[in-house]
Image (cartoon, rainbow, N blue to C red; front, side, top):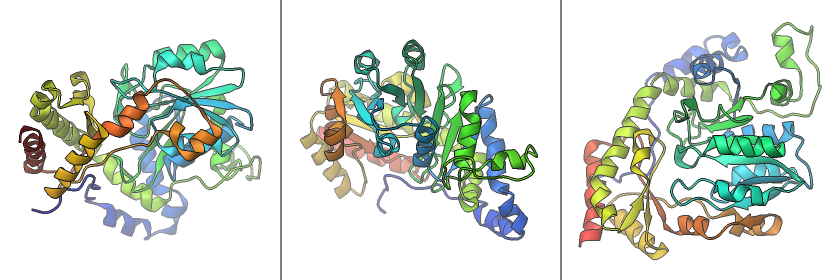
Length: 376
């Protein structure tokens, strides 16, 4: 039996045809042909938002930090259990990260701790929707309104998931989504900046277009475009856009397949969870669980043993983040508020294979292998 990979990018049906078409006419490249087709697919999910396809979600976060004029002495609040890109975009501009512990059920930032972290220097709160499962954005928006703060959704894992019927990333002042090779909808490498607050639309456009007002020129508002701000090359290239477009056209099929895998894992492993061998996400999340499927085992040692057992049986599995507040740079420049939920998740969480190339037989084999480990 071949090794069951933890992740695998979906096979593209039309990508090579798209590339051939793209290179058949230079004007297609110059005119951002596939980027524009992607916008047509994406805009219905973000009806009142301004969208900018970026080379990565990291780049999208950097645009936000720039647009907010983040500087030395500013503070941003974010969960410690997230990828380093979330903090780097702001720390690279001199901001102090204030790391918040996570809640144990959804592994999102513990909102009960947020107001304890706010000072006169706080500029923004970054809500990371871990595994694509939403934070309570209503509570966070009220806190931000009370303290005049900007709310940012790091919805990197969240395309296709919603909060109260609205696509994640499209609710706060800003949102970002990742289309990286590790995500369920992929451009191989890419991201999306979602600008929901109208007052930031013009400046984010200028930063995105290398600090020029090219967007106004394209619309015919000005006779030429010129340098108006400091920016950089954040755009997604057309080869990535062509791949993303192919994925967006079948996004419903991709998402449905991943929901099916989640439900199979949950039903197949539920009895072991009831015997308290490990914790799984709440059953209420399974119908919308499309990014990853994880177990929270009893200890770091148990995770190591289970992962090694799975590997022996030809199954890749992965842990996830090292807490940012305990990392070398995090201890140097940040501070932490909370207890040990982040540390426990970091030590005990194990992610199972989750991708559209998985077969039903492979999912069943993974389930039975885990059952063998705990029942033997």
